[in-house]
Image (cartoon, rainbow, N blue to C red; front, side, top):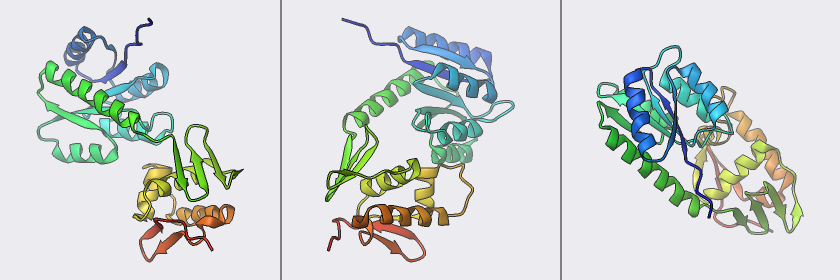
Length: 236
């Protein structure tokens, strides 16, 4: 029986004593911790070490924790990387911004190392449960989306889509009957660092409708807001 690979945790903390203390407690629990003392160093280690989770202090030299969080979320290969923020009691506004940028949880300083490790374990358990119930495919009438093979078929015939078209379609299929604003779609598909016009969404919706006529009347425009996918396909 092979043993499971220890999970790698990147600790991003500019105070060496705190970083070493957290590292010690994580090692005791069987994790493989590594340390970055600056935001720029954190970016390099995310790319080289491929951590399973990041413990991220908000107050960092060179690049603050919020910028690190944004840089992690904007890259497709790290967009889902779990992030646990470390914040001070007087940084409530930064904590809110961090959570809005995609951090998964936070711990307030000063903290007990045992409490931090317990939060790390709880976050891993939450993610494992979510992955257990995550669908590998989505279906909408005769439209079938294979999320593993990254393929879309309509009545068994494959429809070639760009990465953005695939992401946009997936977001619609995951939220049928719900109004999705252009900003929501931009954040979900293009990421928080996209600074272009929201009309980019309109262009890609039109392309989806051209490639898959089943969506022509099923994706409806909601005035001044965005779009909604009908609960059931509208096929003539």
